[in-house]
Length: 520
Image (cartoon, rainbow, N blue to C red; front, top):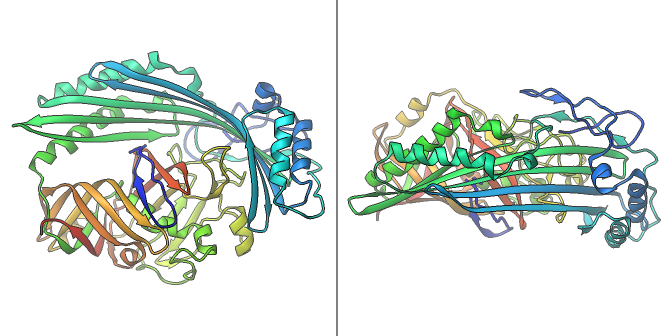
């Protein structure tokens, strides 16, 4: 899905939008890399002597960076960093055989941060001239009032692992390339469903080039592709209308849209809509709830994952703030946040502070082991950053954020999990909801699911609210299946007014009790 989840510290409305890196230890400045192995696994980018992307395109020289860094540290500070960004996005809307909207957008600028303890001075400029950058740096420096710091003596480009194709460039793809695919998808849908009344598609693709320079002298450069397609249909049957949708997303190029994926997009969209005509509502009350593999991971992300972001814990907001090395779930529950899942929407080669991406073990066999840390929280907890410092753009400060959050597979079959339930519900797809980050209270809207009776899925259900508490639901997980699936949809997570792309996943799990808002 691809709406935005707008997360704040209290109850916040959330719309669920489903919706090449370089670091080399060699002398010289900003050696961007244009080669490197594609495919699965953490390849690294080989160094070459090509000019920096930002130096070549926008005149950001080593000399200018040194001057700006010196201005940022002119009043002291624990550290400072410069985050350069150039982004381009294409959006194409297609409805019933024609393009009905097309839009492009471009972003360019640098964000300058100075940190003193847990306080941050931040300023940005959309002009990469030396004069504008110096002015922003002096503004950010206002947070400090100490002895002036020194800029790094050497700037060294960092070598980061690579989890997507940094050589692809969506800027080379236009509407003419995308239109035939959208036309084909619409024709397929109409050919398969006689009750179809409307087909809408939204295609989005973007390219983001970033460069992070910190006061330790580390320079990191990345080129990040991203794409997403969403299909929504409206069906009419015996005077009744129903609508539903599905989407696909990845950090890939046009090659992501294989015939198999296009076929799945159409099939899942139609199937999820057809079944709504036969769906009812379950009985209300506290019931056992089976969460289906894949997109049910949104509940894990929202109701539990945010509470494990370190800023909420160092401020004492999260219910998990005193739970490190304590039991929070049964032995079968292991939860991971991972930026190294190849080509997924949440993959990053390094975070927006320049820290290498990694696989972070949050809960190990039911024991809470770690939070997700940016540089500030890591310093306070005296641990290393987990590569979780993320920001929406150069206009925003980084903070601990999720990447791809998921639960590892367990030891039961999905049939065993469902078979354990005498009377309950099976949740298959979600649309939106809300969550209280501090207490972990949540409410989610289930679009598709089934009633479970005597260990079998029976009547389809729709439009159901489930209401619970994240930490409590985590403690009430009693079975975890072996059918883990990373959801292929495009989620955008919101927090403190910032949206970042994420992935999520889950095996089939059984939660012994969640309040279901069904028929009275």
